[in-house]
Image (tube, rainbow, N blue to C red; front, side):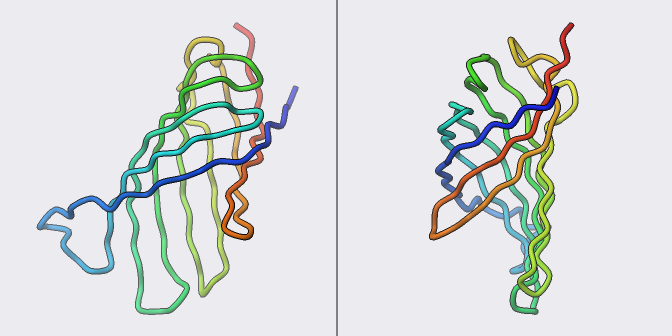
Length: 133
């Protein structure tokens, strides 16, 4: 059975030093720190790689984050994989649970997350299933 979890989150992105081999002004690396509230009460830590372009509103990013906390009261942790692009201002974002990454009561977790940013505030809609052992 598919379940939805919804709520808000705060995110802090911290630029990280670039490696000399990748010292291009269009490439970036950031650490991610999040705090989720609502149906998912958790924190996460992760890493993001970004690529900008000379065209305004076009860019891409990939990221992995480890989420630790409780999802509808079930405790454990899991990993999320992000892949996003912006084509001249039109966003496309896919965030999925890394297969078999759930631990504790979140073992068997699968799903995808959508993020909405409105008036400077972030919210999530997490559609998921948990396979029973």
